[in-house]
Image (spheres, rainbow, N blue to C red):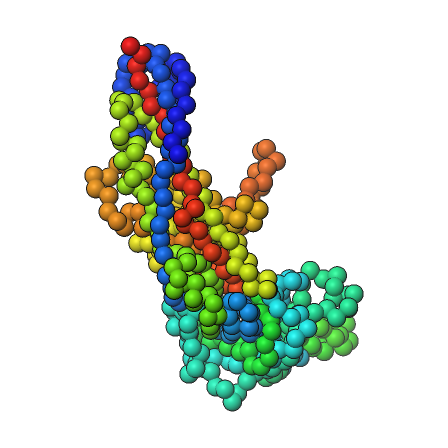
Length: 459
């Protein structure tokens, strides 16, 4: 539907608006003219479901466990990761012989899982036997990178507090595995012998410890999203103090952690349900995460530009261009919902966007939070994208072929001291891996709205 609204404006006032717009053809002579505001929503969106392929999310999050979900399928996740060491160990009071114990800790917020909280699952960790490749992806196979007969530790865990009041009061849960004490002493001795080997994560992985393989060994029914992984070292020493008396020194240090500076990868095995595959075969446009399906779409940029240029006037201003894409949660009988965020990015820029850890620039890449009440993804600021195309002599298909992909968005709050304000800014946008997620993307019902102003001189 195209809606035309008319009003009369003072020429000087309109000149102030139009002179800031690169697409304006306003000349130097302006009088009181008639301004016509046009809202055009006659455009349509088209596309199809395509496989996501292997994803490379640079994230500290670790997805562990295995689950079968009716209407979705099954997913299992193991992890390989390096560790970032501290650059200084307390060698003034301790030596490698004073390492009393060392623990590997997987911390996650309450509720950071999908499935049965009390189901017992098995977890085994292995030391890596060689360096991880730099280009890790979700389809990575750890075979050949660890020795199955030489585990560091194993445990059985769940995600329930089991009515434990002290655990319920915490803002996190922890899965802890006690590692061999000799492993901890060897790490400490490496620093004693050569502190430079702790200079950064890459050197530490090369010279001291390549990393760990975290394997879900048995059980099913839950996926847990670990948000913080560390190794905690307990130190104990008895020494003479300045008064020649024996003092007992105890210390606990988190000397090692998984961080964005080192490699960390979720090795995913996803087998989708037949019902989901059938929907794709029937032509449904679906987003399914993690590492399953996304949408390739044709944005009607040529039609939008033609509509704008067809206006019979010497003076025009493109005001706004918005896009709203409806998306429904697919019923599964479980807590599988639509991805919380979607990234809209030109297909030609898709690989580079994630490879270079880019953020949406609102020119060729955009993101939207899912609106669960309206059941849609909204992109309200496509104006710069279309005005950039207006400057081109020729528009190619690659200029309006987009990928709509499920993503995770990390936000950071920035405080402004002058006005006492707080602003949320995006710090990271990566492929979505947190939990299983699905959405039926209804491109046929998408709403595209172009708003522009025309000015004609009064006769």
